[in-house]
Image (cartoon, rainbow, N blue to C red):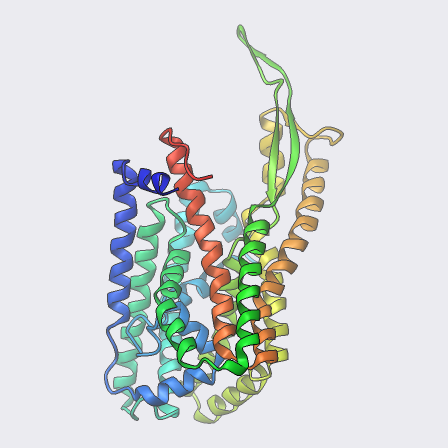
Length: 424
């Protein structure tokens, strides 16, 4: 195993890519250590301990939120902007054509518009969170101009991380946004272990043992589902071109059980965080409205059962949504027909599209339910045991395992391309 890991650094191009990614992750960690001044850290820790959603955000930011750093929002606004843009493809035909039919050029335009949308969203979220901290006396009551200045700095920090995510994605080692979140979670592991040791209670030994068992089962389950796939046999018709015979071979179309990976979890958490930011941002227009909305949001999400139910539904919906965005049965059917491929017993064209729709709907159902159950399992454990550390750690574990598998697949593909056997 170590020999195969070492083979990564024997290939100059791959070694350069890995070191490039690590360098930018170091930059991310340095930015996460630059705080906004005049923060009452004691009050901030109490606030984060009592608010699960912002506790999640602190984990994803690698502790950037716990010291109110300039990148405390990480890539959250960009994820929210991406969700909004992908939803708009269902409303505006031109956006749908740009995303699905214009290839790399259309995708580049789509991503550029998403980044334009990220700027106001990052500003609103930054302003809303700073206003929330000021209302909790974690930040001093500063003037409106100073608050706008700090919100602009936070928005700029989020855009810098979005740019770093693009640079990482270009290295073909994995999705840059997911890797940044992965790095933030991993950087918090020593602190989480230290907190668990400090709060260790012999009477809670059974709860800790149950958490370890569940963590092992989560890892095994995530690996099993992520690697699971439905293989649809494809046969290619024989065609004669000139003096050569083409086709006549059989292959298969793999449909993964969890086609969306970890993206639905990230999308769901971003959506859950967004109402609190918007409620605080309403202070720009009316303090009364802001206080009322904040009260409603807190009442809703402080109920663990309501929070877990909403979280589960969002994960399931985003699993279907992201699968529909990334897997287009109509386009696959057209490509098969152009290349002379067909499924035994299924006519090319519309029947093939309907068959693929039926298969992807059924397969995704089990993947979505599994992902939703794994996502809310830590919340159920917190309800039963009352230990919030286990809740955050369980969700973080889910994301870490999924992103690690994605990185492993990408690196393995790079090694295979260079005639290395890769990982087994």
